Image (cartoon, rainbow, N blue to C red; front, top):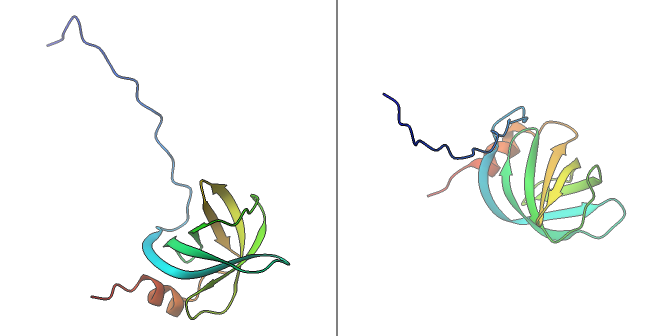
Length: 110
């Protein structure tokens, strides 16, 4: 059965996920982000995988910029800013995140 006056709405193209692993949503307020050679600034860890993360911060980091991240209770982690938009920075870690730290960051406490 077909309709003579049917109208189709325009659909945006689907976004293709390019990450190697699922990013787990987290809400960690105590995050520090530091551009090479600058003082650390406060940030908030939004999501994380063993390969990268997204941080909300007022820091102006250019795409491709080298940065250091420090999460609550962790050592500094070297990363590269892959994208920066609307106060969020998508980061790729230089080395995969330690499993113990990853579990601690993604642990849901009740």
